[in-house]
Image (cartoon, rainbow, N blue to C red; front, side, top):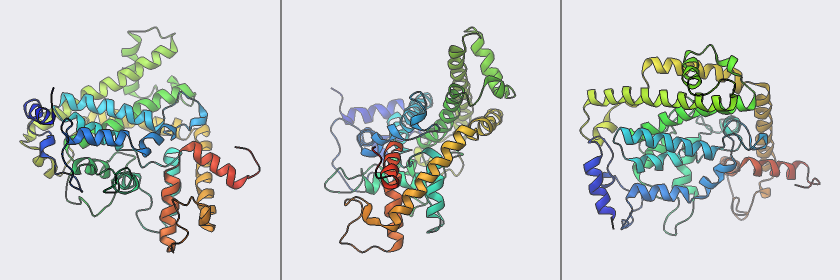
Length: 388
């Protein structure tokens, strides 16, 4: 039987010098005995999967809200796709897959209901309180360090420093790193950078799939993208163009494959040129290492621009976005007027709160909701005689 020490020794043999080894972890905020069988990053991954916030991702919007249909990605299926893509990249680059998976599975824990529409609504409200507003990366960090209460000796999940940095400093075109006093001068590992890029890769690819399925975009809408045309040519060599459903799947497959191949080639060359000899050298390096080539970035940006125009601003999506914002703002306003409507576990009746604290309590409560719960709560509070 292989124990933790055996796995740590195996990591030293098969992982690259620049990979983050489990035995080199900076540890946890609260010291705990090490596990006999699992490495620290395996334990982190398992703790994320078993937490309440992770389960709630099943009923949180990615782009299309859950009542639009069962086909579309949810925040949970998106998270699983990111983890799968990130592990593929990490394995090829000889990185620590367990660390990658732990960061990937936790990277979206802080998202509120209704996707980016919900986030923008909460951000607008909270900006009246402080400049940072609402940042889902910071909230993901707070979930795993404070809000999850599963252990008797500490709040949060007590994850390792490397996972916490990956969560807090997660960065894509849609994700701004959270601002915190912790880890200000510590950079992300290559494993964390892989999760960032896998998130962006998954987002572009599955939004095309969902967009085509929804009818918000058509193949003709995407024809001006050279990247799309390349994927189309690859796909039609393997399947008849008359089989639209199969063609769609093969195009998305080709898009993902081309991006991963480009990423591995460009990032691999960059890592070789930088000649990192340790994970510490990586984290001290100011610039991002894991990236697409300039040509691929340009292709992706063009395709992403078409998605922005055709999908995210389609009238059906705009309606969903507006409705989501109204629900979030309505809930916040009604709780603010009478916080006693909040559950006892959320708002202590025998405690005095400053206005700022009340805002934070309401924001965290709403952000913890699933789409379905928020919709039902809105019906109860604004139409109390209607059965839900």
